[in-house]
Length: 212
Ligand code: B1M
Image (tube, rainbow, N blue to C red; front, side, top):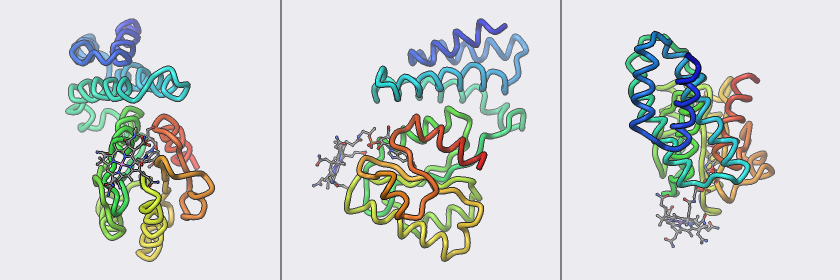
């Protein structure tokens, strides 16, 4: 039984979309639960991708290809996940802050979070503080993720966090920031709870925030 999950993880790592979809269906047909397939097949494969990306053994294109295979596998599982067979690892509203149109890194973070079982709500790019406030009211996430790639827009992380505070939404909400110009020291000044330098670390940080 476990063999198919190992093969699934390794096909996902290689970005083999059709193989992953076929194996997910095969595992379901064998009677495995969606939770087992998600945790021990898809997420296990994506965790390995994250570890190797962090170690510098994989690069952005390979991670994107693996994330797409994850997404194809998730498509097969989604109807079962929606019925409540699997509980989400947490919910994250994510976006690139106001004035900033860069979204490749943010998308990668989003895909890695999804790969780790998080539910995500992607607000896209150039997202103003008011839009984050509205999204938090509407979607009630545990985590808000802010991305910025420009030194001129990273300051909007602070204004977004202030807007969440002013709206009375900050309590119990964890905020993670990241993006090329962002540092741990800058993150502290914004009032964020955590900083992640890359997409793989973002998953570890999100898991830690969930447990905090
Ligand atoms: Co722009 N750009 N760009 N650009 N661009 C940079 C960022 C720049 C460093 C290039 C340079 O000058 N060397 C520079 C910023 C300089 C600065 O601020 N100090 C720059 C500039 C100046 C600009 C414009 C102003 C150029 C102009 O028009 N004169 C303009 C601004 C537009 C705007 O946003 N308002 C602009 C436009 C663009 C394009 C539209 C052409 C395009 C974006 C396309 C897109 O994203 N859809 C673009 C690109 C592609 C880049 C570079 C080349 C690549 C960025 C990227 O995607 N990296 C970039 C130079 C560079 O970085 N080499 C550059 C790959 C990506 C995977 O990495 O986004 O860092 P990154 O994400 C990482 C981590 O940072 C982290 O995890 C990711 C994966 O490991 N991370 C998070 C990111 N978000 C996170 C959130 C988290 C946690 C971790 O928690 C929530």
